[in-house]
Image (cartoon, rainbow, N blue to C red; front, top):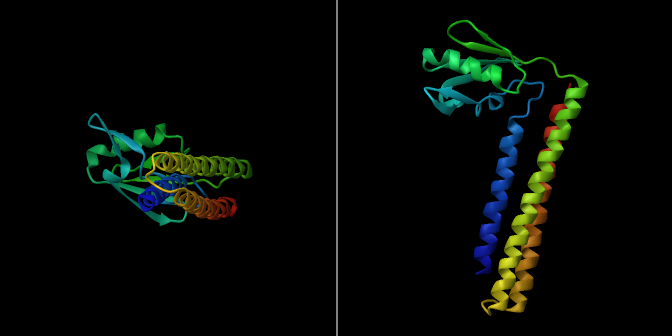
Length: 185
């Protein structure tokens, strides 16, 4: 029973970590990365579709993204979605492909991005602690119902705390790497 709870905790906490990594891949640094626009919703024939399903995205130069739609008719929809996004990129459409030039980041913008990064890291740490809290509550209920012993409860709480600490450390490592990437000139 404790193993099941620990397995559930590991899965849920890892899911929170994966979500953080996915979110951080969309934070723009000085380099072009397809992850910047892959999940951008495009209104395609009345339904919201991620850009990655409508076009191939490549990086021909360090500061440029090239978006090549699979369906040439979707070019205008993709361009409209890029203009409406909060990425601050201006699409250049030549009728077949869209080029996105990434401007150099200013120092103020870098600091803003670092603040956003720290907020997302804190949100992830809170998610991880909430998962720990919920599962400790479950363990205590099991102990009250007599399904596990007091020793099992203590061991389970200790192992949950160790897992929480380990994943919180991973959040820090991911954050430090992304902060270094953002501040790199």
